[in-house]
Image 1: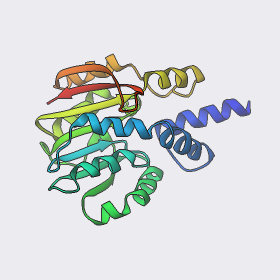
Image 2: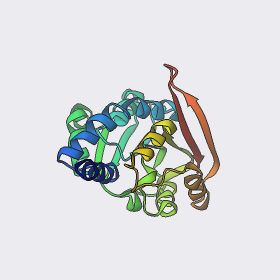
Image 3: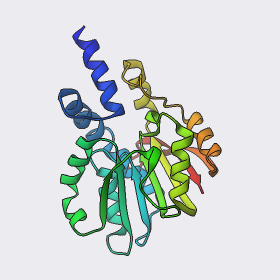
Length: 214
């Protein structure tokens, strides 16, 4: 009974992280320990240049934003992050206080279904373990497409083995992790050159990535 309640709380916090015991568990053992390297992998496969304008959707504790900042800190670029969770916004804000104060990183509380940006703004968009929880993947992909510049690239990264374990544990009941469904949504939203690749990090850890171009 108690385990069932805890699993339900974790499932809900994976979709929308909040404060409390389950939110702390998800932040500590999923976002910080499991997702940190995946976030860095996402940034590395983006091939970000120092003058690029970059967006991460669903940034969690902020590790992807932190890594992206290293790519643009010496140029004219800037990194934006959008997150629906107030708890994650606060956590990432603490991690990135210096970068935010410098004006090179900006965090925004918003939903991917209605991004608060002008059209044709970003050179790169990336997200990690995020699209699973979008109620309308086509509409959300359409928003990503809208805010990206022509020929800009979008990257979504995932750990298939980790997802399999989470699904078997019953904590992804509020998400749809099927990459092919998301790729179909990207196509319907107008993206081109959509591709799915199995990759390895610099340390040899496997991960997968979905690539798409506007």
